[in-house]
Amino acid sequence: MDSWNVIDLKDGDEVLFAADAADDDRLVFVSSDSSLLTFEASNVRPQGRTAGGMAGIRLAEGCAVMSFNVVPAGRIAWTGGDEGDGENGDGIDLSNASGAVVLTVAGDKDALPGTENGCAKVTPFELYPTKGRGTGGVRSQRFLKGQNTLILAWVGAWPPHASTESGAPVALPDPDMRRDGSGVDLAAPIAFVG
Image (cartoon, rainbow, N blue to C red; front, side):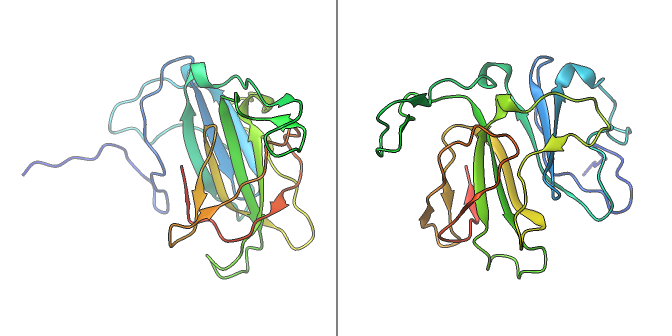
């Protein structure tokens, strides 16, 4: 059986995600210190299989990339979420909402993984500005007392659905139009998002 490398990784590096991307799609990195970096895929030149990857997000010491995603150009814009009576009487009607969103969950890095509910925030992706490759990006969630890391980060199409390890649904907060706001306490730890 023939085999070959598809990327030349340095010691300690790992592949988080791989996908096709059109030039006008956006690449998104989210790090454990709540930094989010996004830029157009056209800023990355194609490389052969012996290449070592590309400059992505610049990480602060002790931080790691939590999520990497490709957002299709046609999914970037946020529509809907109009002020009104709302589905739940909260003043926001999300029945016609669409577009990409960023889900972040803040917690304590010293907590045993899977035991902390955390504080979640859902924000329309279009609120995050593009920055250059190799930069630190912008803050995606403000940490409150007792929070010092993201325990989960996800970028994808509205609406996100979250569940526990056993498959029970976890209710997520309505979208927050502040890109660096703090989160809302969750009722249970999130194991899966999609």
